[in-house]
Length: 148
Image (cartoon, rainbow, N blue to C red):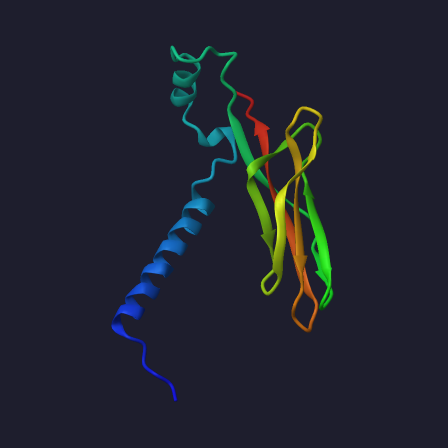
């Protein structure tokens, strides 16, 4: 027998929906991916502020880099890595996976040190507990220095 949800459960679900969709909207529409998205007067003000000299300030742009889509066979564990281009580092706080609905994630972390203590890739280890193959794809947020 199916019970009707209580009014408080409906309100909680609606609140959860708006909270999650708002963060996704902001991440998709307000991520600076090009130096042309920054107002020139703001860049000038930052470069000439008293707290930082022009050599101390580096503008960094984050761009997602995706791995190849990798099939994860049923009941198997696979590691997928998204590698940033040469001389570009992955952020220690950005990365993850896409196209992995139904997979169990055991590792999602930056990896591959560039020799200076900065990661250059994002590694995701997933297990497929379902009875059919699922495709997984890792994503790394790679930090590029903006040319102004």
